[in-house]
Image (tube, rainbow, N blue to C red; front, side):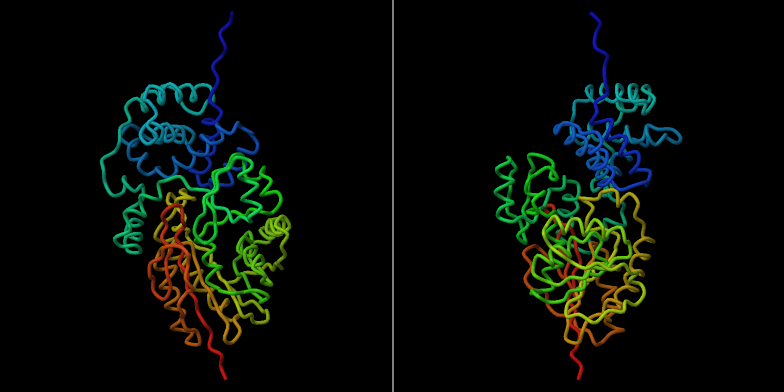
Length: 419
């Protein structure tokens, strides 16, 4: 009898290929992994392993690189680098037995032709934890560690540790959605802001709750930017830089008459499809918000501006591998151009909420400080009680990114009524 030919583990092959693209800066992890999993249709267990390997490797990448660097000479091929990082993650972080890691990844290198098997064998046998420093402990560059320490003070170490944990799935659910998910075997745990933490029994898009418009993914901290507007029922609301329209959907669900504006027209198609799924409606407009937008003023304006995303490193860990101090300055300059154009759309006595999913002072408190200096007709006012932890940040607050929450800067600005 002929022995069965060995095969490469499909979850690890998929993870290595996704990691290769993400580490090369070609794409972001979420869309790349989602597309790969949709095409591969792996069993649930393998899909879970692939997801854990991709996100875990990216979260710990700077620490893993520090461990690998002494063992590598010259430039390593991107596929080999991705494979070695994933194998090092399994060995040093997941605690997979070393002999199993070496055997599995040498087999993977040979059968999937991702790297020279001899290199993988030699490196994964010898790789050891790097020296303990702030950078290797947090898997962050030193300058970004200081950003978090400035933002969160004595809470910073706990916040930094939290960024290395797997991200939970947050869903805004109707009562029927909760019952439906639980009937399918999913576990639903109440969370802040009425957003539930969910452990799914099947892929979200395959669940009845999602298909029937009873579930919407959103981080509780992102929803807090909507909460900051207060009661919007039957009011006209401008959702600026609205992206894929998730906040527009949350506003429409609260009875607002929403116009969502974004510079990327194709995002409107995804937003419209999502709103149809939810049984909701909003209007959409394509416009570059660095230039004035000629619309009638509204009583409520939300500008959730494009940003570096430093408050979302747990969910989007590849950001920290690409981000530089210069990028922060560039994004702050972009926000400073958008904010006055958003403010011009607020009617007298109306409310402007400015938010970014970033914890850098340049993108939050400093942008607002400069805006208020140039626009004395706006006055900061306290936010309504938010059902999640915050710390003061200039005229606004920062949500605390622990327990799977994102870090958002949020400020509420009232325009004077005039005469």
